[in-house]
Image (cartoon, rainbow, N blue to C red; front, side, top):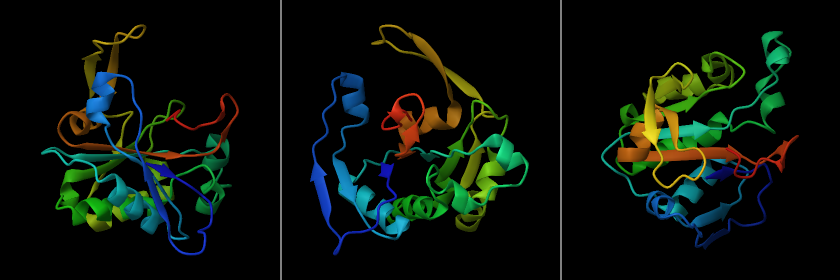
Length: 200
């Protein structure tokens, strides 16, 4: 699921095509179509994308991983506003659409969580609070999770060629194994690969 910052074209159009994957495990875990949706309201975009993709819902939790990004020095100095982060950060309004979509599919908000972790910061809680994600989740009854503080699950990758084992935050692993794992990436420029695309 990818967020976009473009304005809506006249009329709401939705285009769905099949995704191509090569690894059997990835195919089983992510055999979803690819969808494109445009609208001025990010919540409507989220709902349209998920409606088109129609993810299979398991008996486990729904974990939503947004792409949150910020300049740590400016953030710490109080020089940022949520609007400053809009080009590089998934909005709380988009996440609201994701949460409400799954509630409409019968998943209680108490079974949903939004979480993030940063490689250069010990906690994501302050950023989620700053962006209004924490308030949104409290209002809905969903959780927010700092992935850096979460317990890890050691996972062996049977089909891997180079990295044979990794540690994954337990909330992410539980959603991947038994529920729904939603990665909300943000298309933006990146100083290393030029654009983030599937980096997240």
